[in-house]
Length: 208
Image 1 (tube, rainbow, N blue to C red):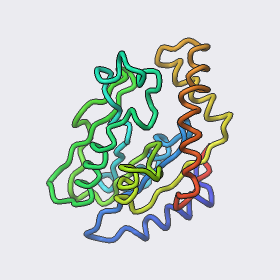
Image 2 (spheres, rainbow, N blue to C red; image 1 turned 90 degrees about the vertical axis):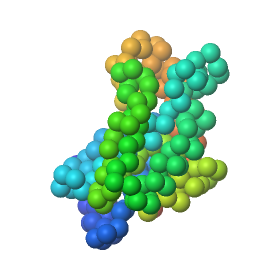
Image 3 (cartoon, rainbow, N blue to C red; image 1 turned 180 degrees about the vertical axis):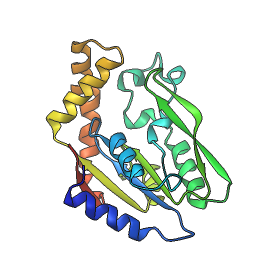
């Protein structure tokens, strides 16, 4: 999976990491770009215990909150996340003054976030957080960006992104027509917003 861009980025990331200091790396990108896969791959480039992945998706609003509201038809949009909760978590991770911090995780099988599913001990030097809206220039997302040492933007061809999204939606129960409609509707509306934040990234990572 190494490309010259990825090799250079990893070398610079390792150089940034110094003893006694935590580095928080953000991975941004549109839906279906491969953020989760890329974040997991970065973690695997480090020895066990040196890096942990904390997805923004753990801060999806629960279905009990959005069911019966217009948000249900836009799940995944920027206003369907607990941005304040995510920001609070990142601030705790930056402070690094607790023995361990627990983060939520989104479980696609049940379509819900699950609290306290990821442990981040204080001695972990690298936290990788991935999500759609890390570079959005509005409150409170501007404060989210301020907690991150760097943000890399995963750049994936649109046709590949859309095909991945359709496959993902079908794997979790949608029929083909519904999956295509969601990928080209709510997902694509979110992608337009996210792609507009691409110039603000510290690095652009081609990932296909």
